Image 1 (cartoon, rainbow, N blue to C red):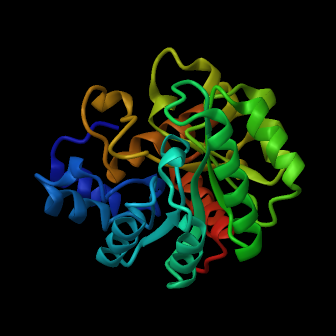
Image 2: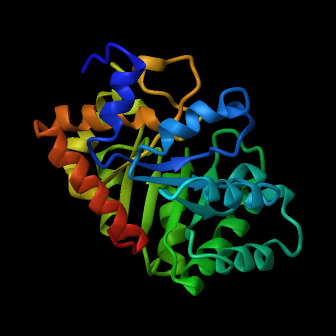
Length: 271
C-alpha cells in the first residue's frame, strides 16, 4: 500500500489492531524526535518494550508509563551477560513483581556470532533467567544468533518453559521454526521478512501459518525494506503485517486481528 502522506499513514494505523511485540523505545536513537515517534506508537494496539541490560531495566520499565498500549519484558541480553552484578537476578525478580506491566522475561538467550560475552557466561545467565521465568510463570523473549542448537538443547534440559514465549527476530529455517513451535514458542517476524532476498523467512511464514506468528520491529533496528538504512520505529510494523498477509494470501484485516489475539494469549492479557 502506498501512503501518500504521513497523515494518511497515521490514520491507517488506527484502523487495525497492529502489534509490535519487540521494541526498545528507551534507547537514545529516539531522543531527537521522541514526541513524534510516541504519537505514532500510541496508535498501535500493543507494544512490548524490551530491556537488554541490568542498567536499563528501570528505563525500559519507565517507558511503558508513556503508553496505555505498552507492556514490558525485562531481562539480560546475551551481549550484556558478562556485566551483570552478583545481585542481578534478585533485582530482576523484584522489578518483574513491581507492576503488572511486566509480562515477560527478555530478551534472553545466546549470541555466538559476536561473542561479546563469553559463551559459558551467556549460558549461565540464560539458564538462570529461564528458571526465573518458570518461577514467576512468565513467557520468555528469546534472542538467538548462530546458536539454535545450543538454545534448543538448554530449553530441553531446563525442562518445559511453562508459559512459552517468542523466538525474537527469527532467522532459522522451517525445521527450526517447527521445533520451537512444538516447544510452545511463537515466531517473531519483523522487518527482514520484507527484504527481497529473504525467501527463507517468507517460507517460514508459509509453513507455520499466522497462528504461530507475532509481529515485531526490534526498533530502532531491523527496519522494513521501505526504510532500509534508517532507524526503525514501532509504527513500521504495518509493513511487516502487510507482507505477512501477502505471503499467506489472506485479508490484511484478518491477519492483523489474529496476530493481535496471538499476542494477548502469549502474555495472558485480555481485550
